[in-house]
Length: 91
Image (cartoon, rainbow, N blue to C red; front, side, top):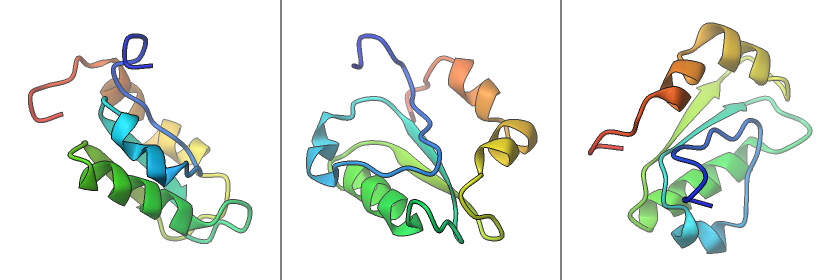
């Protein structure tokens, strides 16, 4: 829904990489590398697919975390600031 959202930030997620072409807004994904609920590879596949389609996606990896990466993402990164800033030409 690019008409509703200017950016998205999936946490410990993945997606249907075959539909990556539909993502028109900047993506900043967060995932714990030790996640035993949703495999880390799901986020890497999706981020790679978005970028392969000409999109703008990055993956923030927490090497020492399992599934709960949201606490660190919200508390120790600039996630909120990034979400509310207007996208730039590079995004």
